[in-house]
Image 1 (tube, one colour):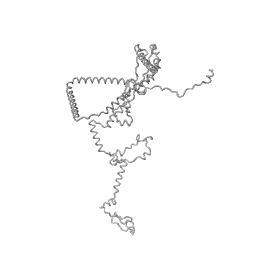
Image 2 (spheres, one colour):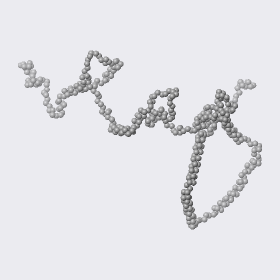
Image 3 (cartoon, rainbow, N blue to C red):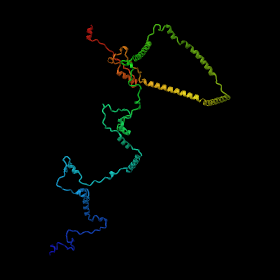
Image 4 (tube, helix red, strand yellow):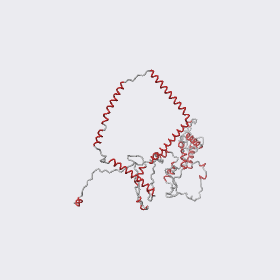
Length: 451
């Protein structure tokens, strides 16, 4: 029996009553009835495909267009096609990015999420209070160390300025050891610890290095008599100084010769003088024992005497006399103090005289100290000796500067100047001592000639 729909009754079990009914179809399960009042069945038995499709579409728009298309302007979504390529649209081969960079480049227009922890400042409240305090101090004119360093860096001169030529006659001069040295401007306002660590600070020398060992000038001006054309008086004064030096040397030599001179026949010792020297002291030795015996007898008799013991009355009298002497002495001092009130003028005169004497002694000491500062000190075992005076006699004076011959030695003069200024100790040339004796041998050729 055929069904109205063209199918057989055997194929369908029963007919459905509604047009959307699924009765009679094989392979379809019956819809399960679920209670949706319970929370555990909300997501399991709810159809949320439309919501997920909507969210996927929103995420796709954000990834490709950087936001929702409905919020974008028409100019950013469409362009007018005129049929002509834009000028400069195609990049040059050398400016085009590499293919590997294009692969690694992100194709999403969604910005990466911000790391909140990276923007957080540790101790933010403390730093904020510190900045507020610093702002208050700046209003009062008190700057911090970092601000001072910044101001010093801004106010310093341009260190890259072009250096002046050394042959420029109009350039300014400055003292490299002075306080206003322009080379030290870049170190002004810097911390000493920073300069020490960066090795930009000048080494601090001890104060003793700044004190000169002597007040004698490095180059002393010689007298005018040493000139090639001196005046008569100046030349004679220089000759007199050289003459006095030579006389002093002669006196010392005569003194040494006199001490080493062998006595003459008149001064030679005789037998009588020799016998008298041998007998000296013999008579005095015989008298000494007698005097010693007398002293020993006196000491013996004195030791036998016993000291008498004082009585109580004598002790009392001595005590009263001692108290009376102390009282009289105190009264005398008191009277002298009262009497000194009437001697103020004489006391003031004595004080003024004493102060004047002390000032005079102080001036003498200062003058003596100045003279000692000009004299060389004893630095070694040898004493300083003044160099010989370079002087020409009257007949040796040249007629012109062309005929002048140099006198002395510059190296010796500087060496003596160092010794006089207490820079080095006085020295003398080492004496050569030959250890082995010299042996003279006649050569055969010389012997043949002499024979």
